[in-house]
Length: 162
Image: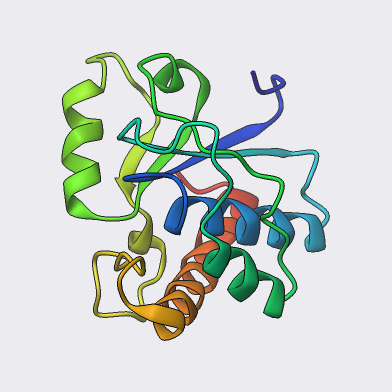
């Protein structure tokens, strides 16, 4: 549970082993570098239960480490309805996961539910592509997109815009 003065952010993909843990690691590091680590609670999860308890994909761990992000300690979990009580921002990596989240979302949720790339206005993409079958270049592309969207999200949160 976030402290009263914390903003909470949840990143969501399908299995919580590639895109969303990468986003969690990148955003956590950017918040720390900006002196906002205590002000922002960050987590990630998946809409499926396929990988509960698993570490991120080894290729995601390596790609993140090459850019200075440690995601090796993260463990996959599945989204649940109580997340809507906890998180101010729930950000899906793609349209399919957003649709799943919208179907779970309580009618009284007052947070921000959207695609993560909504915070990366310089990209024409709406979805962070799943790198699982794309090799090393797919993981590098995910990092490029996640870094861009993370910078935009951090600016939104620190700037206090809703």
